[in-house]
Amino acid sequence: MDHVWANCRRLLAHDTRNALLRALASDGKLVCMVIDRIECKDLFEPGDRLAWTRPVRRNDQSGPFANSANPDQLILSEGRIVTVSEEGRFVRVYALENGKPL
Image (cartoon, rainbow, N blue to C red):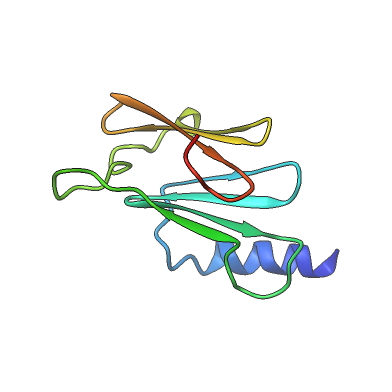
């Protein structure tokens, strides 16, 4: 259990990914929403390696999550990641296990 807390402290203290929002799933996965992607780190796995990264594209130059900063714009529920993107115009749903769009 000590490595879980060490991973969590290290990720939150030295966040090089510029996460806009973070959410912690009940199974120990920390999901970070960045301007142009969603990343997941399994806190039960030692080291800094991410479980997966899902790039998210938009037609213009800005990232789809650029204006997503409210806590209710990233929700983890029943093995799914629900995000609000592109100034609130779209809801995107991903699998928590592997980040694939649903």
